[in-house]
Length: 416
View 1 (cartoon, rainbow, N blue to C red):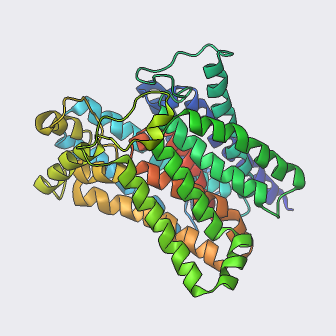
View 2: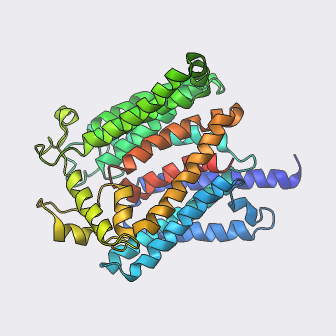
View 3: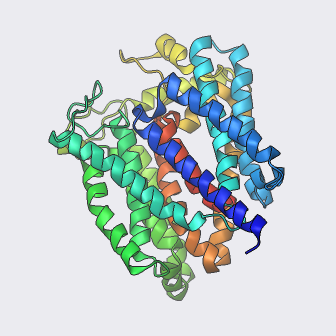
């Protein structure tokens, strides 16, 4: 390897390690929910973007994905961040709106940095085991805290559910669900060393325990969807599906859609259902009560009233107080997609769709193409499916630690 190539490889490895460390750091800062850690990291990320763009050895092209689909994903996220900032002009709560701007600014810088770290021979193969290890440490910390071995203060409303260190039990469940899918892939990937496969299998136990102890119905549903997707896209499984015939493949594909739809309906059941069992009780898994339908009704009503530009970012909380039918405080619509429609209108939805479609196309092409890329993206594809479902039924897109975890997964495909 030439000296410039060696320097580039070292730089990419350092950048990838820094992005992983930043994600881990936010995990232990309440998931980055509060202003100071989030804004500080956003500033650092944009400084890093400028540095990567200006260093002659890397060149600006390093930040740009190599395919149109990848560029669509990055452009969609940058556009969403910009439109969020523009919507502050008509948002009802300026301070809350600016918090959203900081959050999207962090996301918009993080994805191209991850692309720069992983493209053209970067350490993409190391991302999957690194993220399994990170989530195992985070969930393990929560398990130790729950057992009393670590002194950690539970967040308000946890009621005994596993919530630390992210400070929100459903987000902990979503992280455990995504990592569980990645660990399952790691344990079954024939291209990995035997020791690494064994480590993936060992990680399944604490991740499954953590998932259960969050008592998060949505996270369990997300894990189920992720595992089904993994069974469809893993190269080892795809060989079996090809032999099974077209009918079985169609049935499996539509079955995955049915599971996702059923999971969404389960978590956001009819408002006439009784109040769900609260706290650390297995009764929650058999209970379909939820107020999400009320949140979504108010959000969709706001979208109908202002379909182009929406209420302005962070505007849902004002609309909820005005239109709610239940006496419950809520600042989020508990769905990335519905809240984007309400607050950012059709423009925001189009930008979010461009971001998601770009990632999906990159994943699809890698899976369809077979070979090393298909093996590389199988785990990220399944884990992102789990996160995409959970983003649709909760507000954890606004928890940066979890979203940066997802963006690292997305970058594995976008950087190819």
